[in-house]
Length: 222
Image (cartoon, rainbow, N blue to C red):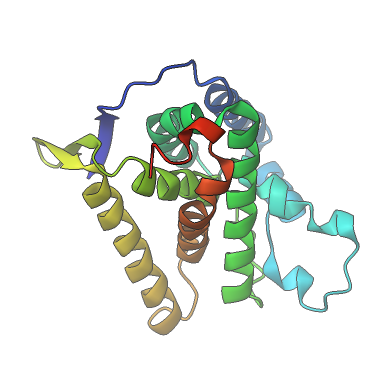
């Protein structure tokens, strides 16, 4: 299922959402210019590799990949998919939080996603990259803030349906939990998708969003 649009209009221009999309696309263009070997080196330098932190003796700067990994992507499909979800759900969440709080919320959700992945896969030497965890946090906030919104969704091969947002996002997080569970107990943590980062980001968004709302929105949108 692929979401096309929602039916919640924004009341202000989603500046931070647009900037985040532009920054991620620009960085991926730079990545692509490096070639495969250059991208691999970049991922091993700035991607999140849990095994690096096994002894807890690292300096603070060595934890920078928890942040930098959020702005790296492995392919055009990877970055386009993440940025589309950010565009679809981010504008409304930014609307209710305000620009500065929304940016902080996005980064905190991304960090929560990274630490979730680390705690589930502490011995992994595979670099993890992508904005998925941070975007999942936006989706988690949207899940609770806009329960009655509707999402126009393309269902292959040629069906279009309006799903309530809580159903669409509920199905999405259930698939992540299913994939994460399978990666642990069936594929021995060998899945190329960081399902638990998605789950951690989504849950962080659900738990934390109230602390980032504009004062006038705190009660109206519950």
